[in-house]
Amino acid sequence: MKTVLICPAERPALAALAQRRPLVTLPLLGRSLLDYWLQHLASLGATQATVVVADRADAVARHLGEGARWGVEVEFVRVASEPSREEAYALYREDERGRWLEAPNDLVVLEHLPALPKRRPLDSYADWFATARDFIPLALTPDRVGLREIQPGVWAGLRTRIAPSAKLEGPCWIGDDAYVGPNAHVGPNVVLEDRVLVEAGARVTDSIVGPDTFVGGVTEIRQSFAWGSQLINWRSGSTLRVAEDFLLCSLEAKPHGFTPVAWWRRKAEALARAFASPAAGLLRREPLAPSPTPRPAGSRAPY
Image (cartoon, rainbow, N blue to C red):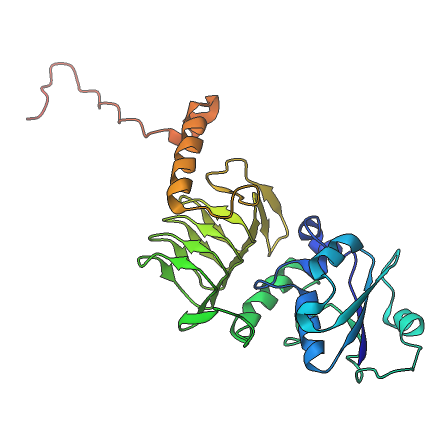
């Protein structure tokens, strides 16, 4: 059975996220739009898929491989610009030889998840966040090895480590190989992608933390995407690059076998550097003691 998948190219509303990876390969609870669709179409009987790519086709091909994970033979077609549905039908679906999946699964534009057809995650940051939040209770599928619901509304992936004193509020998704430290507060409405490290005392609410991201113990993230050192407010679309890595940084350049002890040592080193800088007074300024109240001449101090 054959099918055609059209990968969306530019979506200005998600420009900051698209700088990192092609939109169809961005992580959404551990997997991408392309992964979810190929899994879904394979379950419907697809054995051949033509993937039409305009944005960074080589990166999409590396992400996907040959389709062996789903038992689907994948053919990549590189194009200069994203075709419309009508153009795609004319170019890739006119050959009636062989068997095709029934419409609309014979040609799919990857603009939503199979399980959430009314959600359009590529329309805005707010839509991406809403899609991830709504998908949390639906992503517990049989092929998710090691995934379990550790308390009502809270899902944790394979090899996830969570301190007993951490506070988790559902709905909440914690990906594979993630770590949540003592007295950290995660949730509600939070997605921690794979290999996220949330340090002791940190707080994350109504937010998505991208893979391989470190969240420092004095950091609070609200209504945002945090990925590496970048923060994106999903309500306003405003972006911020965090300079100090003891607050927020990427783990991608670090060994994946990190430990909380190693990161406590790294934080201490970063704090020492920060406090040695000329601007450190902004971080460590202590309140001044109140000046003594002047007394009239000849008066005595109270006992």
